[in-house]
Image (cartoon, rainbow, N blue to C red; front, side, top):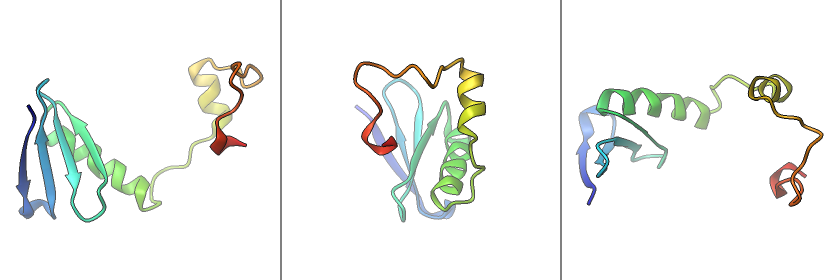
Amino acid sequence: MASTTRDNRNGGVEFIHEDDGRVTAKDIETGVASFGDDRAEALRMLADALDAYHGKGESVDEDELAAELGLDQDEVGSEGRPPWDE
């Protein structure tokens, strides 16, 4: 069973210690959460997630990402495109 701790000194962050040893850091104000192998990594990942949430993250070039991942954008599965991509 996961356990939870709050650390208001870190700006209202709630830490959830997962059964598998990882730690989830959740910003109480926004509800944004991320995880890492320890508290420090979870906080770094949460900072990146909050940047993205507040629109401060780097934009992603879909063509570059597809090429990097080896995806063929012309090949769409039998289910078609996801509803948010139509």
